[in-house]
Image (cartoon, rainbow, N blue to C red; front, side, top):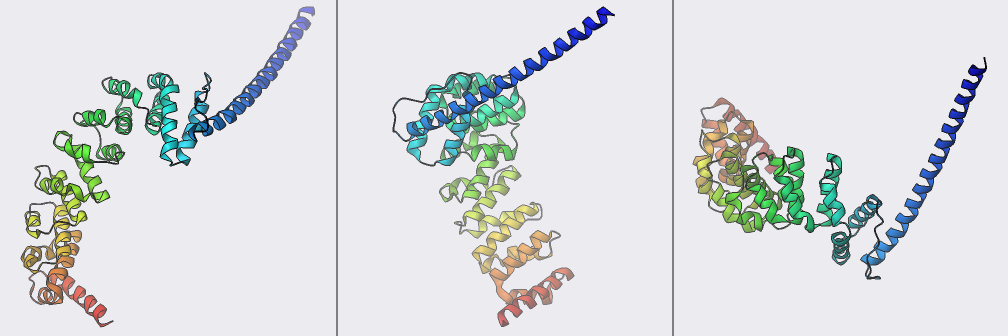
Length: 339
């Protein structure tokens, strides 16, 4: 009986001890969190005064508190667009956090590495560019490799371009995200011929999206590329830029063997130039099996030949659907003119 009571007593003592331990641990964590918050508030003030130029000495980074420093840096760089402030912040990161991010790049957890890449790009931490280039040579998964290349675009474009000349696995959209981080596309244009297909397509896409008229010659030259996707994107860019006046450049795309995308884009251009001599190239496509091509063909037909040409198609075209479509379009245009 005594041993049972002793066992119960020991259990009670263990439970009380465990409870006391948990209470002490909770209080220690609360004190530690309060201490971290107080340090963070002080660091925030120090960082602000340093960025403003009100102090010359850099804020102190307490070991183990780098995560708080990173939070404050993200908040500050996202809230200010003042270049002089950002320059001081980048200087601070280079001197105070290079060693920290060098370690994060090699962290065993991929989420920590990916967070580090994002911070490196935002803070323009150029001192780790060599380290990132070495990471590309290692056996890293495709998703991480894509992020590394995007990061290199932000801190060391020459390394990123070197990777873009060998990386065959990057998706088109991944390449757009990477090249899109460059404000100046000229360094990519200069190396265009050496880039892999995804990066070439991405560059043409960005020239289209940004209306980069200064790269007209490159775009024009790529409209005859052997790769169909390169041709399509060059054609789209050329049409978007809107500086091309030679409508005959688009005639090779108005063939039965070309893709419907190329046909549609060529017809859209002919609609913009509105040349009557382009009618012979447009007419075969008013009976196209593609809705997109037919629609573009009728728009181009109206722009180049006017209502008279619509009336001719409505009356004499051998294709029944083309005649019906022309009649409907003619009625619609006539109604608008009357109104």
